[in-house]
Image 1 (cartoon, rainbow, N blue to C red):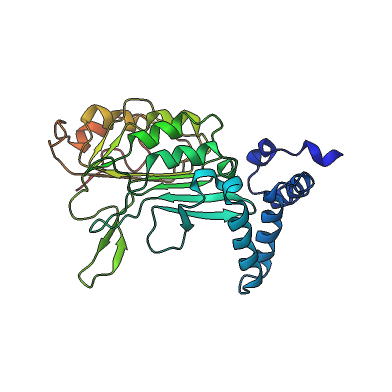
Image 2 (cartoon, rainbow, N blue to C red; image 1 turned 45 degrees about the vertical axis):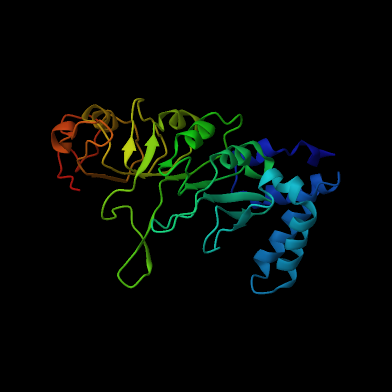
Length: 293
């Protein structure tokens, strides 16, 4: 039948086409795939957001078919709205739309496992991933992101990722409430590493935010759809900053670069005005502007 030509690859080309997902559900239900039922139930949840019936039925699907639907992630994840969990997910019609790894409270962080990022990228449920947050990943007392970045760059079938946040931190204010602020007082002891291999694999990126103590920019930035790019660090060299200034991003609307001078990671302090003033691709209105810590 004609419906059998609908594959995940078709969905990747247009992840916003809910009608195509519903037709895909009809295909996979015919062969006993629980994802088809999950798509139908999650559509009912959209139509009846305040009822418990469809939410409970969705949970029963995860209870019965968690291994099929998520593999090794099946027992590790919580909803995106969960207050604190190492893996938080948002589903949309049978597939994960948003994934966040690690809980970013700097006073009491919960580290996500970088290997789970690779598990998600290899799994069918992550095939339509659009938003990825690497909030806090750790292999020692430092937050360390390079392993997860390498897994992201080497994915066999990159998802249609639209936003990427590496280093996401919640800071408690004087009253003890959380505030999400990349410009926190004192940069976290984190190592962002080199995200350069990601750019060519994810041309669909529209929003990129990098925050941490050490970042390396050794490859040209070519992001044809990116509209917002934010870098917050004390560990970038002048040559890396100049490379960022020569980036190709024709759709860019907003650029934020927050810098602080620090030699802890062996990089000389940079002067952002002299590093960026001669960059030919620095957006109009930004070239040579004041960049503060």
